[in-house]
Image 1 (spheres, helix red, strand yellow):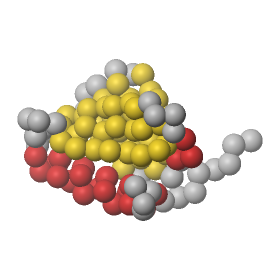
Image 2 (tube, rainbow, N blue to C red):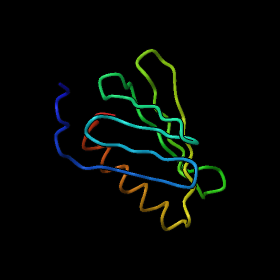
Image 3 (cartoon, rainbow, N blue to C red):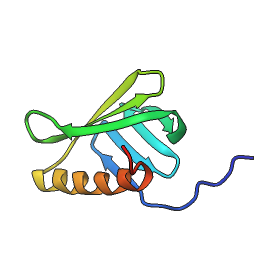
Length: 99
């Protein structure tokens, strides 16, 4: 039987076709209904930035084997994007304080 995931901070960014979720178990990327789950032990690093137009969150998960996976989530406003960046920084800092 799987162990329950301990409670901790969570992050979620969603648009019409994509989503990024970060919690105690790891990172989940979803694009057009296709989901990829990455547990913390298999993640080398997580990187994020804004897209060149400044309207979307771009997040990449780098796997231990060096492969990387990206997801882009559109924000409805720059204010929302700023909220996502603050929330994401806090949650990643909690689970991955060294990067």
